[in-house]
Image 1 (cartoon, rainbow, N blue to C red):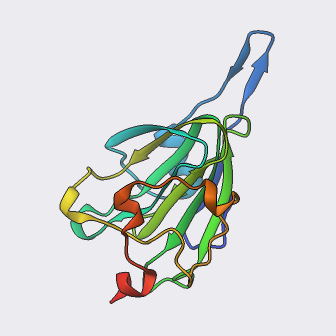
Image 2: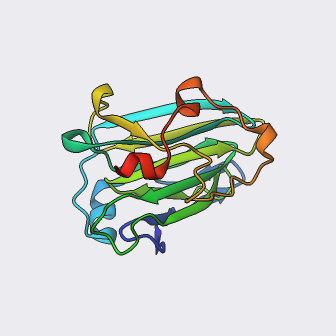
Length: 181
């Protein structure tokens, strides 16, 4: 596995080693021991989630706060997304900075999103199956978010704005300034 530091403190882009032959391909999606050895992070993932989305579906920017904050290891099983992490840790040198990466079934890249980050993605292909591991359980009362089109973050979601499909809940999320108050 290859691990690349991103411009955001503790946020990592991970590329697994893929073995291919005439039958197809194989790669280790996650190995706890190798992850700890490579990153130095003692992460204990406790929940796996999976979603499916059509082109233009934007999910985010989401996070959980307090005792239920979550670190995530995200990847695409099928299709292609533009994946975004936003550092919301006030004591971090990358506070309020964003990082985006293309994750796809072709490149098999994964993004490690630490606790204290907001996270979101938009589907760039007709169909997306998105999977992620969490190091804490979902807790509805701890769920927060930031509106996808926040002017201060100014995220380029890589598709025309008119193609974006949002849930009602995601369309009502606060701005970054409102979130930080």
